[in-house]
Image (cartoon, rainbow, N blue to C red; front, top):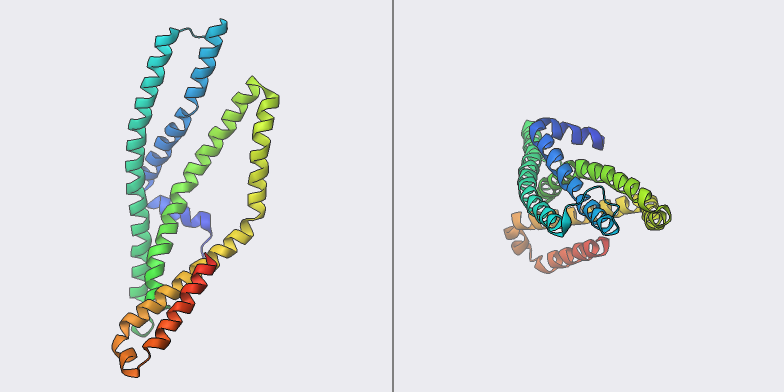
Length: 235
């Protein structure tokens, strides 16, 4: 089994559909950026009330602007969601196709390095993780950029209030990062437990007659119950 660094894995999947990835980044970048506009409009409205506004559109002008923004966000959300769905399916489809191709290239006596059930679980869960990694990598990066931009805007409004709001969030991120090793370990344990249950079910379904002839129904049921309990504890 060849291990691949996560960022290289994401880069290779992105290289398969560069135009889709570019459209995804652009659309969700516009979507996240548009979330800053209502706050800026609210600032102008309050400044307009005090006579310090750089723009003076009047009440109806601001209402029309907010309504147009809401409609634009709805349309943008639909288009960006459509692109995201296509990107996700293409990414997971690529991973599943490569996994199947790797299995077919193996010698016939070593076609599956895992049990049938575990292999099915990997085709389902690992491919989903691949598409999730690609989808969230650019979205989190974009959201981080606009979050910093929002903090800069808030600092210009009120430094003390901004720090009182932002510092607890920063502390939360640091604590989460410190706990990431534990979370990764728990996810690995949970994934292994799920694969064991799926693999056992696949093996049982492939050997129903053998189990019946051996009269091992009770032992098989107890085995599945133990694996399921282990899976429940790992989640």
